[in-house]
Image (cartoon, rainbow over all chains, first blue to last red; front, side, top):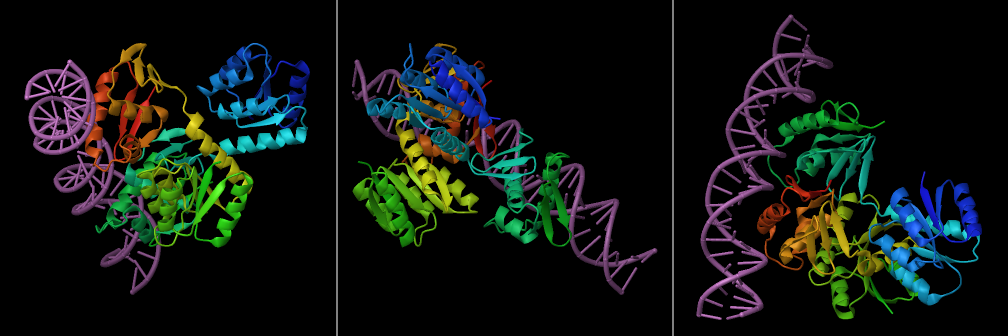
Length: 221
Length: 221
DNA sequence: CTCTTGTTTCACAGCTTCTTAACGGCCTAA
DNA sequence: TTAGGCCGTTAAGAAGCTGTGAAACAAGAG
């Protein structure tokens, strides 16, 4: 469940927002001024922040800037009226979007969807096979969220298998992709690397099953 | 007004993109292949580039690489589905983000916003990794609040590592960011600078760990 | 010019990873 | 049963990569 943080000094507005957000399935926490808001953000690590610009004490802009020093959490600005200058300032300071009070709940939800999805989809390319996740950009593998250390060859190998998870991959296909451009006869070494991989994947990971005479298949649940 | 450059061989796609971008207030120029795209980029100096990966002639990757030799303009990749490997290659070559065809205009605009704003506002003035603090504004580093003297190359290097603290950074990624635009083979010198950094970070600082055959990872507690 | 500072190159030891080879088990077909 | 193919496993040498020190090289300041 995702957490939302509301930073607004009006009790009524906080109540309204809380209602809307809880209906949407968010866990909600509130703060009545900027200082408290930053503390809450640091403590609760929300997945989205709704920030009123017209705060007593620390201004909304100031809160946003300080927040952005250490966090990339999506921030939706709530501004009172069409104050173009302030809105621009907020967007430049790293806000993700804004709504102008008064607003409809439909609009609010729509914008929340957009900014949250944006963050969500900005992940690096990944391949998933059961409990195993391959991060292709960072060359990292995790098994049940625990880092798994793979050598370059092993990574390339499991990548080919995971790309076609559930289907047979021919030995030739594997060799072509893992040992691309190399002339050595790798069909011998393939067995060894498969063996290493199976050991590292252990019981919890997806199973590499052999299809005699043809190739291998990665079996995820 | 910001200028956008579209590099795509499909007329229809160019037309769609132009419409979207002009609605957003961009000045738009187009190119139907990579060679033309590079010329347009050099001539018009766009503020954002939309680059199709599947180009005739010069591949999209190739275009990106050549572009990155002299320009830091934000590049959004347009790729068709199921080209994970190519996407990774593109991101490693310096692309800022990608969208997979077919895509919604909302998503496209969202990503454009992100990558364009990131150039200006994304960088926080400080990066911290354990006891190490990098002040990007003043180009100063402190270790346990004590000033740490770093050469420019060392600073750039630790910055790249610290920005992705805890994650692997490929040797290519490092070299591209630290020795941007230089042709010399820096893969030799990288080892030396890593060595220097490790000495300066000593026992108290974050550890730079090597992932053999892949790259390095900064380990903060 | 000389000195200083920073960068790159080189060589080599030590370590990790890859390849190769060997062997035994399982299955199938004769 | 026996022979032959294919696979899993292990071990050891080969190949490649990394850490380190020193020296050459480049650039700027005094």
